[in-house]
Length: 108
Image (cartoon, rainbow, N blue to C red; front, side, top):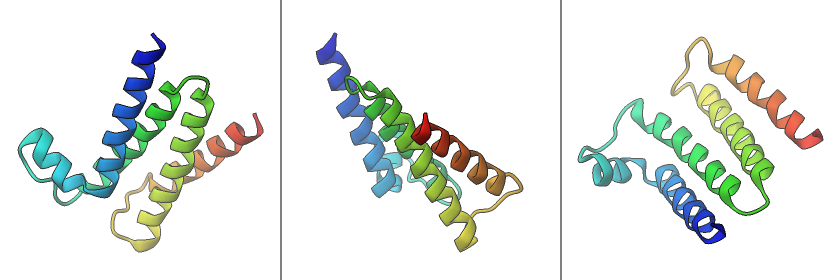
């Protein structure tokens, strides 16, 4: 079972990193279409989630995976808000919620 978890961790984290770095290529290879427009930031958030999932699957580090996800998605969403590239009415409340969650995970 430990080997399966490590395999899953590496696979999910690798896919997540690929989505963060080259989301359009991953979309083309997985879905047959290149990702464009709003699909790019959505794919990057999914990539962050997959990296966190990969860390959570790694033996003994589920909290580190959630902390990584929460901190990284906080930074990425804030970046989107500050650059003005993608903003909606719930963007900043989501950033604040993830700041709180990140702080709770650090102090917990």
